Structures are given as C-alpha cells and as structure tokens.
Length: 170
Image (tube, rainbow, N blue to C red; front, side, top):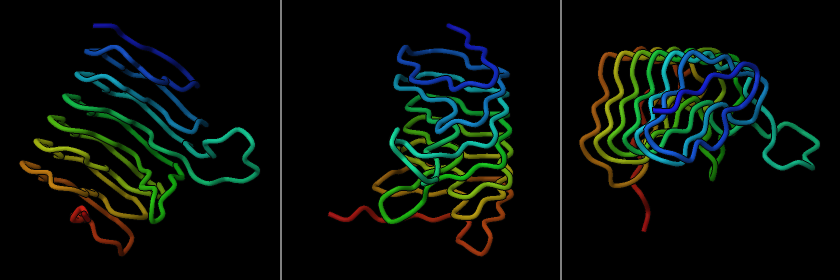
C-alpha cells in the first residue's frame, strides 16, 4: 500500500490501486483527492474551501468538482469536508464525495457546502453514520444500481430531498 501525505495541495489522479490517503489537509483547489484505480482507502483527511473552474481561461467561479473522487472498491471514512462550492446544474452533479461500486462511505462530516453530499455511481455501496449539511441532495443516486445501504446518517439538505434516487433515461 502506498501512503500519501500532503498539506495545502491537491492529491490528483492516484492511478495505482490499493493506496492509503491518510490525515491530509487540502484546501483552495478544484478537486481535493482523485483516484482512477480501485481499492483505495481515503481516511481522516481535512478538505476545505474547494471551489473554482475546471478550465484555465475561466474568469469566474463555476463551482468545483468533488472534494473526494473515489472509484470502485474504495473506503471513504472519517473525513472532514467544509466551506466548499461544488458545481450543480442539469448536467453536472458536483459534491463532497463521489464513489463507485463496492465502496463504503462512513463517519464523514460535511458542512457548509453547496452541492451534493455523496454521488453514488455503482451498486453495492454502503453509506452510514455520516453528517451532511449541504445545499442539495445529501445522497444522490442515478441509474440502475442495486444493493445500496443508506443508514444512520444525519442529513440537512436545506429543503432539498435528503436522499434522491433518479431513474436513468434511455
């Protein structure tokens, strides 16, 4: 297992599998922690003030992508995410955490953020014991996914649906 430790920078595009991203402080970036291979553990990180625009010629603030982007077979737990502005519109669903199939999201604290709490993009995902204070959906699921367990979470979604499951159009 490779270990990553950073302070005040993005941990971008972890391309190897089975890594441990532990106890980092990350802020003022477009995306906090990003993985493209499976089996990663993202634990105990503090991520705040995630915002910006994806393209370099941007003159304004479109909103960020994700604080944590984890693909399949990942564990995302005990992270503290706050004061973030994620892009959310008809085509973009940015938020604190993105996970794919066979992943666990637990014991995270997300507060004072614009966007989604968790964007689920796969089956067999467990979301438990998290606190979400977010402007949009606490948990967002789109598609034909199954075996998703959402339990023991506290979700304040500012009058949006706390948990939103959307059918994938054909």
